[in-house]
Length: 474
Image (cartoon, rainbow, N blue to C red):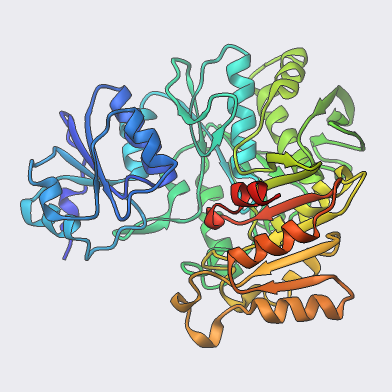
């Protein structure tokens, strides 16, 4: 039985150990703690890049594998990642030794966010891009923000920054906090400014249904202080339901007439999208962005609204948007061979898949869009989206679906079927193909791809390094 009395961060904590240190957030936290002068160690199962490489560059000792001996030196504090179970040998040893422990959000608040004004971005989709845009605009405006984000910002080549300014930009995750705290991570932060981009069913391993997801977001939105402002996407019925009667100030953004912040129209002229922004019905400014897709325009609009709230002028916002380089694994061009472009994207939820394909399609001016998809999240490997995925690929010209790589983790009666997805898409007249492994996908695409084609590879994992292997094969 875990002793929650020890779930306290001592004031003099200097030696800190992180269990599960190679996760994106945990690795960033480890680096921030090291930069703040703490003595940091970590451990993870099968230490893996890219975060293991980041930790190595910071000279943070990382143990490969979990072992009670890793914390024999009695650290002042143990930070337990959310993928770590109560049966982890280091967790058991932490309890036996009576060591203080905490979750990642608790550590962020205590060591990084202390005295800062949080800008918190939440939602099923678009959190990483919106957070990154806000952090970059604030940085360009001289605010020197601290940020803690779930993706590598190309402008910084990092997913964190310890700034000297007043604000901290945090990507607020709805996933659970730790085995001893099953509430969402975003409940640990009290935002001065917040964004909710979307609310859909996801994370089927911890949420039962959309009603369960909505209860989590409702608790978050209801707890936003009265003096704080929430920027809410205007076209999501779940958001519109949850913001009724909340104590905080609410400003809607999107494309609906009557919203505080609105993009009435836009035009695509590669490599930019040009758009006007209206505030309270009046023209606020004209902007352009290299980000593709209407969904990214909406992410950009939320960032513009936050920037204006902080009195950043339009010229600075426009300049920052043009110089924004994006986030790794979000519509990232990995290479071009034989005039065939290979793009990497994190999309996995059917909405994200649909919007990413829709965003890329206008840029296929001289060839086809080849969509390659690996379902590997806890949600996409379940059959909850089985009948929704077929239409997510409507705008793709050639579709390659890999068998989920860890399907045995899912009970047989609720497993997703890649074969059925391909059959359903063929029934819709789509040129779709099933593959049992990554090697067969690479061979097929390398043979079928033609000059001018764009190969869009979508997965939330490394996909067996398919991007580099395909480029080499091409």
